[in-house]
Length: 81
View 1 (cartoon, rainbow, N blue to C red):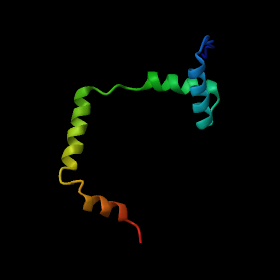
View 2 (view 1 turned 180 degrees about the horizontal axis):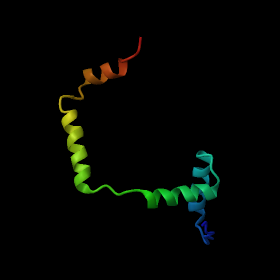
View 3 (view 1 turned 30 degrees about the vertical axis):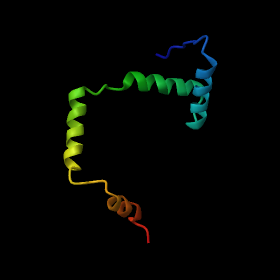
C-alpha cells in the first residue's frame, strides 16, 4: 500500500541539489527522493571485519605490482597503436 508524504520547509539548496540530480538521472524530483530514501534504507552496512578482510585480499592479490613510472607508462600505452 502506497502512502503519500508531504515534506515542508525544504531548504532551497537541498531542493536545488535534488532537482539537479533528478535532471541528471532523468527522473522526476519525486522519483529522485524515492531513490535516495530507498538507497539509504535498503543498503546493508559493511562490518569492519568484512571490510578489512576484503582489503587484505586485494592487497595480497596486488602485492607484486609496484607503481613505478615505467609501469604507469606501460599501462597508459596499452592498447594504443
